[in-house]
Length: 268
Image: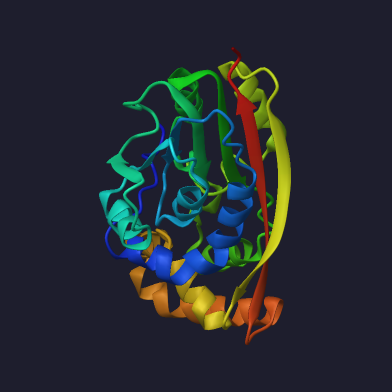
């Protein structure tokens, strides 16, 4: 039986933006936005908009006549995004990637979320269905856990402390880390010539403590710990901070990151 979708709700939604948004996700939002081709694009759909990091860049680039809908599975995340992206160019909506209530889209965008859906092939089929012929899909996923040091060290600390980690789960942050497998899935869906680009950058936090708190409280990791072994929380935070500082420095802490950006076009 597949696990449910990974959903960011409650305080985690606000923490995701405040503790991680400017550091982990903003560099990739800038990069993904720069790859968008708005030529002949009238309908833009963003899936899993999260706290609105990518949404804010889309609004800035949106052609005057284009319509933009930003969606997320979590109403709490949409509330956070609304506070960040104050624009009447955006229509906000709750939507499940496995059952999309849209059609005739020219462009579908998604940053770091497709791997959190329990049935990724179904989500891709839904995206393919709602795209117009000639419509574009652009999305990103994390890759290479060992290279992404915040995730990798967090994974090691969780395993050494409570004996398990959600990092290797599907759905989970690294569930779509194999570029060739994702490209094959896109071809199977109906996209004939998908492409993939590897993007690396460095996330910079003020210090290791900030990064450790972001990893635990800005992601559902904290909820995972509370469910599995709540008494271990102080030890996990302390160990994670120490390991991050020893590996990535401190004041500031610099964390290497690596992601995959996929692009595909529906045949005309």
